[in-house]
Image (tube, rainbow, N blue to C red; front, side):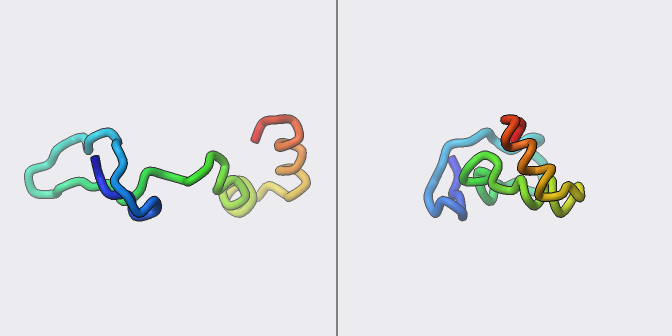
Length: 63
C-alpha cells in the first residue's frame, strides 16, 4: 500500500523491486486516471502522427 499523489489517497500496488540498501524505491502515482489519457502526447507530439492519423486509428478501434 502506498500514497498516490494523483488520487490523493492510499492505493494497493506491487512492491518496489529490487530492494536497494542505500537507495529506497518509491511510487509517486498509480499511473494515468484513464487508459489512453496521454495518447495525443505520445502518438502526436512524440511520434509525430497527424490528427487525421490519430482519428483514423481511433475509428478503427486501435486507440
